[in-house]
Image (cartoon, rainbow, N blue to C red):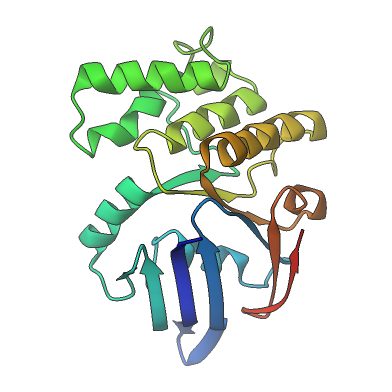
Length: 228
């Protein structure tokens, strides 16, 4: 399979006054096209920083990050924003929906930044909400939706620009177990039926079991991996 995203010897060092904190210490990570990978580790292991690197939300102190063969490690913020918008879809634990917008408008929002015409934005957003079985809730605002419904809106939004990679950060963390299973079912369908590349960041062993491969992170490094 083709490698779609790769981190090579990635370090992230935060400076707090005279103190240096090494959040990542030479992280190596690779995801291939169509793969479902989980990154698992306890609090303080470097998961959030690793997610920021994988999602092109930040650049490393040193090391290289390749997305579809392009090194993004030294790109400007505007270049990173363009890459993120087209290549990566995000699903967050806190949903990150805009409460003043309907579900339909939330899903359509990422397409504005890719200059998609309004009629096409709304048509695609409607189709995506139908896919996650929310066609009867598309004109509701997030405050009128359950946690599981909000996360399904977030899944639909992550697909708005047809990204190569779906990056899910603790996607079931704010949900009860039954709703969490439903959300993971949708992610598995995206992987199995549409061939999407899914990168899942979690501390939960049961959630990580959905992946084809689990990378275990500790002290800013991968210390073991398990392939199903």
